[in-house]
Amino acid sequence: CRQHGLPLHPVYDWLPSKRFSCQVCIFATDADLAAIRRHNPRAFQRIAALEQQINFTMKAKGTVKDLADRWEAKQRAGIAVPEGKHHQLCLF
Figure 1 (cartoon, rainbow, N blue to C red):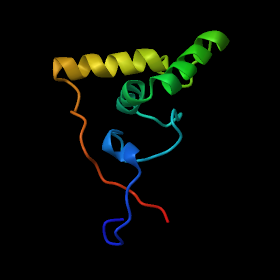
Figure 2 (figure 1 turned 45 degrees about the vertical axis):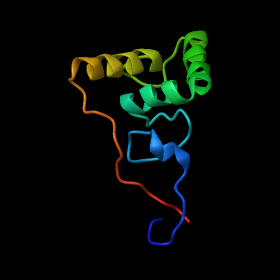
Figure 3 (figure 1 turned 90 degrees about the horizontal axis):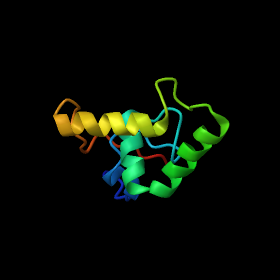
Figure 4 (figure 1 turned 135 degrees about the vertical axis):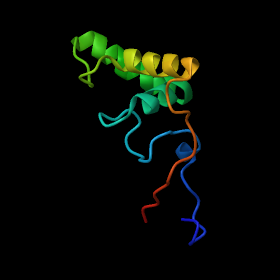
């Protein structure tokens, strides 16, 4: 993108993973889920509510809320790798 002077999607300013996919994706990391909850709470809440409604989680390790909560707790405790800019992919 830089080489061709193309702008990156704004999500790269806050999404910690190296990939860009659906708003709330089954491949999202715990860090991604925490970032999505912080930056797009409406989308996050829709998935969290759906998990409760159907009594099934999209991730085997727990609910999206639990995973985001655990990531943020690790961040506060200094255990998790801090979020930051990562490699970015531009598809044209």
